[in-house]
Amino acid sequence: MNGFEINKILGATTGTLAVFLAIHIVADGVFGASGHHGEKPKLAYSLAIEKKGGEKKEATPLPVLLASADAAKGKRLFGACAACHNIEKGAGPSTGPELHGVIGRDIASKGDFSYAGLAEKKSEKWTWENMDAFLANPKKWAPGTAMALKTRKPEDRAAIMVYLNTQSDTPIELPKVAAAEKPAEAEKPAE
Ligand code: HEC
Image 1 (tube, helix red, strand yellow):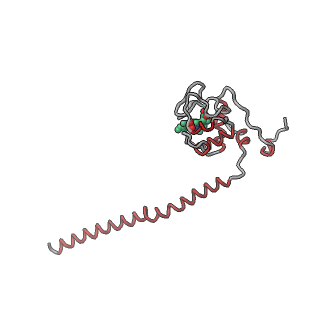
Image 2: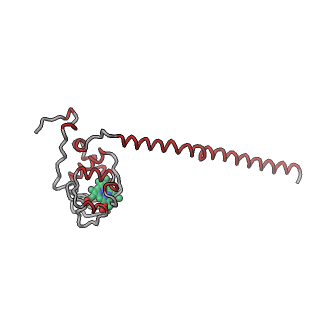
Image 3: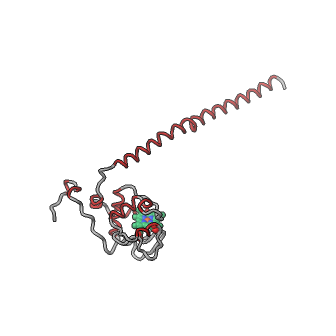
């Protein structure tokens, strides 16, 4: 091995080392530092959102939401539900029970479907309030239920419910909007 060769080997090693160092620095920048610091703001961000949601005390009352709900929008939103539910009368169960006429009917009352968590609620009806609570968080309202999909926005739930009520032989009345809840411009003389 002559001096030239040793130089070559040293050169190659130093080169490799330099590349390795460069990769290490870049990796540190990408995965190390930014990875660790990136997590905290993300956490704080999601916490802030939740807190904001939890603080929403002056939420629009359900009767007001329903009174202004858009059934056409509800029909569109029902697309996500249609993956598991038939809505046409007599179409029968799919992954979930048929939903024709579900608003106002007894909970878990379809004989051709075997209910999970909802069976516990059999003695109750699908009132507007019950449906709103169920759709907002099925597993919370009916522990053990096989339905997981949450509809988080109150306006979206109202739209879906108003649409469901149109898919019925016996639609039920919308809840009365209490005078105190009425927006001033929507004030109507008492019937
Ligand atoms: C991944 C499948 C799936 C999706 C998506 C789904 N559901 Fe369900 N749903 C179910 C199952 C399963 C049940 C029965 C739950 C039980 O037995 O506890 C159910 C039950 C129900 C019931 C009770 C019916 C009854 O006979 O008492 C209603 C109402 C309902 N779903 C509405 C909806 C709406 C509205 C959506 C869309 C926002 C939706 N579901 C999306 C699977 C689904």
